[in-house]
Image: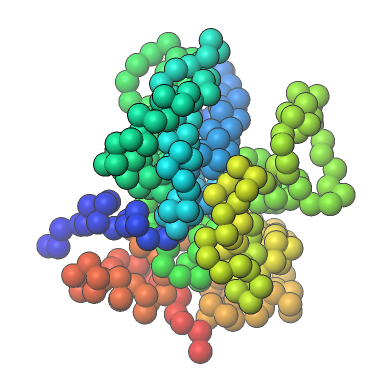
Length: 358
């Protein structure tokens, strides 16, 4: 039996890599949702998690491509950006680290603005500075900063101690464009698959919903508290997420760091526009629900042809992505290459429909 690679051997923090991560709660009472025994609602915790993710997107050199906050677990699709972090000055690295792990806090518990002496303490120690720089593009550190923070908040609210999460997060390495598109759709459609919503726009706390809310002319219904939150936000609701469209012919070469401070870079991640992606999600969601099936629109067919799938295979892949792929996802050719890199004869992916399109 071949031993499974350690997480640090699978994910290389010095390379740009894309991962799908899942963190699951161990409590009988949900991470979010309503406890049917006590009747207590934990829905407000969804906003805790989303706020935390948005904060981390502005501190780490990691792009959040999409996310979904479910009743007892969280899905994230993350892209490490060590190339972006390499372009930060030593002072910028120290300042960002101190936002995550402040030396001092204000009365409300938020991080105090780093002082020059605190920044200098990190900058003047070359080995410490190098390690902090590496960690700022490390997906494991992003996940640690997510789960520890939420666990402390939840334990404080529940007036208890102990484990809040089910061990370490689960991670799938996404090797190619086909697996990334399928995984993004799988994550954004999780509320539809779980019968929590009928359409992507009716889902809440997903990357797709954030992007839909930013569309021109979109009506934003909600309570006054939510409207005040929208007014206080420094930019678009989805401004902390990576753009959807990646255009190799027009996008700048290199890291393309983002200057807004809300995300690491301006790089997209899919070879299709936001409109095409949302339309593909809407059509796929209707097939997944099974109540409004129909032929795929002709202008969307080339997207699936590019990854070598027909419409039925695509829908089945999105429904069963979590079962089809374990620790690595990609075409059969890329999985074979990854197996060789690991020194294994194969990588588990039962019924993998992905192949390199001719």
